[in-house]
Image (tube, rainbow over all chains, first blue to last red):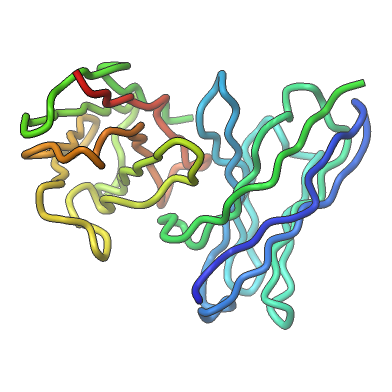
Length: 115
Length: 109
């Protein structure tokens, strides 16, 4: 089955860190850009970061630059988002998605930043 | 950042009617790199349209996209009960970050 499955979300204190993972299956993971998108009730969908097929290019939205790092391990068909210096406004449901055109989405993992 | 503004915020229509959703960009979207997504409650978004007018795999032909430059439209020709959802536009391809619009909720009248 073609799918993406996120994990690693949870409750973290402001200033803390968290690492999200996304496992892809049923398709050639190393042939696609991969993307993280987050969703909050108040702000809708927000594109967070993406990474080229071989990991050689990475792009971020300004609000997470210097705090979040996107990476991938093609041997493990996995995408990651290392998040540090977390803020309350990072609270969201985080989706991983396949491509620059987001043709496949996972079910999301919830990150809550609160003391 | 290329800001996308969708209108209306909420659209109330009946099954069988035609829906027209608008997405306006603050800067020209190069090469028509504009996508539309549908999101139903409790689900992740799913791709409907890419390249402004190309339907994604499996999307019925009652969904169509049009537009260029800064003005884009998603049209649903005859609404089916399963079409009532939230719709987002997104620009991609050249202008980082790949921004989304704030969404249009299509609700049953």
